[in-house]
Image (cartoon, rainbow, N blue to C red; front, top):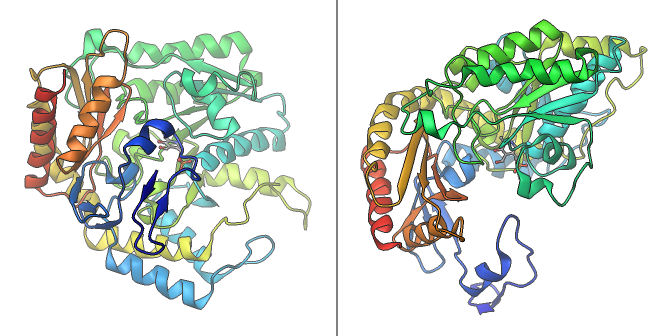
Length: 444
Ligand SMILES: Cc1ncc(COP(=O)(O)O)c(C=O)c1O
């Protein structure tokens, strides 16, 4: 398929093998975005599309914000790349300090990666390295959760709980087990905020730990709010109980905050919002407003020290890293983004706006096809009844219809997930909700 390209005259689609995309379907009828500013994308023919998803849960400050753009441009002209293996550059230390400024107390050792997927694998390696450094090398099992998403690398795919992602790579990383998902539609449908029922699902951790013996279990990795599998909000008390059980057995708790980090819940992290402190915390996406690929793992200082102090003087303490860990452009963007979040009080803004967002999305209750609506702060999920024999097709058609009508939503299976930039205004919220309502009326 050929499209017009302003630079070359023609755009060829077949060479880019697109991620998590039905490539053949897309290339028959492509949806392209060419430009973005604040709350909107613009298609190559100039059509405005309101962003209801902050890109992919990542552009929390809105698109192409001047201070971030300027910082990246300046850095690109000053120093494009510098290694961080046995070398450093000032900006990467500044970026780590800016991140440490917002991480939970005592979790201010920051390891940079380039993505959420790399964070998950890095966090699991840190957990194993920690236990080994303390003479408990038998602790190797990682416990994830059904319907968890920790990215696409082997570790994250294995600890994750999405059957479709795992089925082509069975047992690649075999040191994993899984808790059940906390989703309980029968008891919790149409919950506003944290659902009432399901704290008891945390007790399953005791069963799994008992099965393997705590002396073999390294860590539990969970998303505080599962996003990619359809906005699954933890039941009241659940995360506290998981924390207690981990502490009791000497198991590290890893929070994957790749979507909940940086204001999505009105606080810097879900750990702050829920008042539950993990031992290791993964973040990416909004760390620099998604302007340059970057992720980071924040580590409890004691865990960091145990690994570092166990190594002989002069030795590399943790044999792990990426060429682009702390890339200068990404680091410049982190510093500028964190400053912008502070100056615009964007996290507080999200908290103030969330009751309006909640009421607006719940007004879709009773709309054709809707079987559940759930939300927490600036995240919402709207679940549709699947078509018999064609799961996902109803949500996909709704997504296409909304895009045609100028609103970008995200779908996962038959669930619409909303996570707008935190600069959103009330009329934008109304527009997103009304467009979904109208689209659902036209979709069979
Ligand atoms: C919770 C969570 N972890 C990890 C990832 C993977 O991040 P990335 O796509 O940057 O590798 C995602 C992506 O959406 C995510 O939501």
